[in-house]
Amino acid sequence: MHHISNDYSPKPVFILSCERSGSTMLRYIIDTHSEVACPAHLYLGRLCADLNTFFSGTLAQIENLDRRYEQHLHWAVRKTRQTIQEVMDTYIKGKDKKIWCEKTPMNLEFLSHLEGCFPDARYICLYRQCMDVVNSCINRSRYTFLPEHILYVHRNPGNILAAMVENWVEKTDIMQKFELKNSDRCHRVKYESIVSSPEKILPDMFRFIGVNWESDLLERVFSIDHDVGEGDGKAFLSSGIRQNTVGRGVDIPRNGVPGHLLQRVDALLSNLDYPMLDEYYSRVREGDLENESPIEEKIDLVEVIEHQFTKAVKNKKQFPLLSGTWKIFVKDKQNLCWVIDFTAREPIIKRGDFISDSTIRLSSYVLQEIIAGRMDPMLAFSQGEISFEGNQILAEAFGKLILSKSP
Image (cartoon, rainbow, N blue to C red; front, side, top):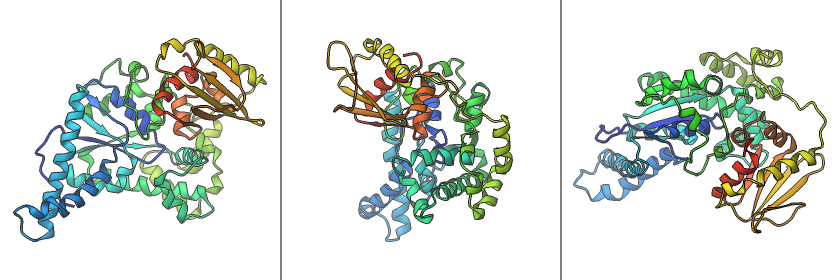
């Protein structure tokens, strides 16, 4: 891929990660900074590839160039960067910020195109432990496969575990090789370090981006508005950064990891200073790594849920744009369903499967853990344990009202 010189500023920042590695959480953290804008998925890698083809086959043909394809492509790459940069410059100006950062996981497939258009770019390489990613991917796949996973599912028919392990292996390998080759423009962060020690980890990351650390940033992450868009995982539901999703991969049977991938998994984990698989399973079970705590007490589920909803709707005035009817479908031994109607003067809560404008689906376990404050709604969604159907923008207000621990 042709490279172009740095004719424009500022230098862009890209988050590289495998899916389900916490890039949404990191995007919200970065976007909270007063000088950095980090929007939802923009698919800039794919856009670079498409625009290069488009410009080389159209405008480059009428420029005063020789007939060589190489000349046309070089011109097209420059035009692609100019086009994208103009849009992003307008975007950050409108946000009153100085730097932009993009987080689409699929950019891993288009690194050569990103490098061609943005040779001055900086990269935050975000990693997460293999089995925790696999667990999250499998939970997410209960509803539908992400487009990025379909190739691996086809390669491993009838074995979704093998598919998700291979997905992590290949993408983590790409990231490690890219990071090694471009160490001066890459900064490594791990999901587990962010959730356990954000004040220790994040200042160095922001210095790498080119801005100073803001001491109140973590207090503002989940209290300010962020742009809504694809791939956000409903991060707006969160009230803080929590640690209780570390070690959840232990729920995946260790002997289910395909033998031909085991050596590669352990090698990649070792390169990242993670425990290798046998040690990981041992440490989680011994309590050295975080894992979910089961609900031990026997409770009246319906009473707990209805108490939460009744308490939550009293705060409806804080969300004046919230309207319509919302269905909450709770999966249990006997599925439970409520509809909250915001069309009346006062919200009405009805138990039953009535027609609604929008729907939220989650398990009784997840809902109880959220109510108890042991699970973060954003992370629950990012792991496929909460799904929404309906107006995505209003889902922000509804999620904050119903699912936040302190609505």
